[in-house]
Image (tube, rainbow, N blue to C red; front, side):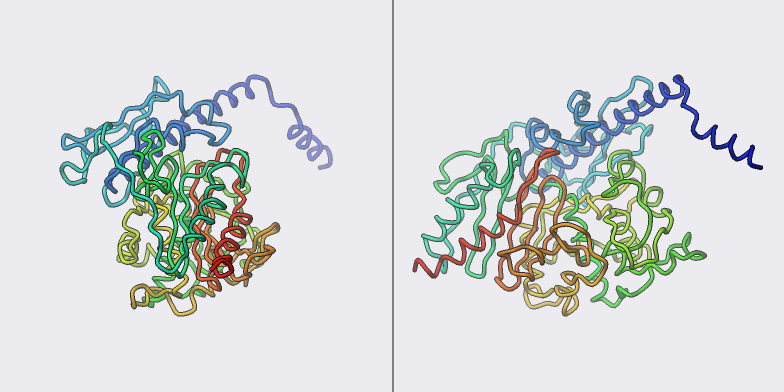
Length: 483
């Protein structure tokens, strides 16, 4: 027995043959090209089709300069070298986007839809003929002339001095690198009880006399991918279902595959708090097969095993958010993110799905900066919009409460939202939705302030949202001193 164990150990420790390693390197390189092609197809489709849905133009040059630069190191050198085709239906709108990646395989492609944005096809599936569900003449040609949105109006209760102080201070500095070397801000929106401010990359400064720079292509109608801000949107949609009486956060998120093991104990609350106890294979749970490979949520996120008792360990994971939404969408046919978006004026927002139709609400939502500000306003109102209750009473306190296991680092975590409860100079009730590449929605209930910062920050750079929030709040607080 000792000999057999020793022999087995020796086999495990034996060096991998050179031919096997060479084959693995070849497979990895091919997989990276497939992922790069899927990433490019999905982002070209999402950025252009969702912008056109809102009536604005995103040239390919703009998407290449912003969304397709500074991406994951494994695919960044590849993604911009791959040939692509934007295929339109006869009446103008995008049907799908194709990207070539291998001579012996069909192109990767993402298919556009008016209601659900773009969805990425699995590797190896060939695109069909051009077709669309968009209405006639909805597409916008590449040379579509676009005018600036105009300078932000002076709200009647905010002094001219404060307006100038905000723009000359933190808002302007958000675009000049003050809050992070290499960070690239595309939009800032600030809402206060007495008014609001906005500024967009390549758009309109206070004089409002110049046309939009089409190579930048950002305005208040331009959607961007929210990345993990979508997790906070997912938590909000759970709140909508709770208010309807469809679910309680204490309910188990029972899957058929979990019915005979300990995973049946996992609750929706634990999923929202990243405390399921399940394994995930990478820090941050990158989920490349789903996000760029064309796999489905059912294939990618459901079957990871349990490593810790549910509710005892914090582990940030896309899989947990995806399972929280599956717990509702699989049981209720009226689960409809678009209806919620329309209800609170997020009319430029689209929640995209996987190829099988499940919503990828861990990342894949496109929204304008103004739409995210509306979401923040809903939380300032504790779930009431124009007199109608949409979220349960106390939902703001629920999502911003650190009642579960907490992450290490500068931020706490609630239910789908990050917490600024450790940040000096910022009210401790401040909470935020935060996403990759610098997507931030900051909500400060005690100050009645919403701050949105959108960006396309390259890998390796980071926007200092804590300092920016502190400076915006200080600038707003200085109003009475100057009156």
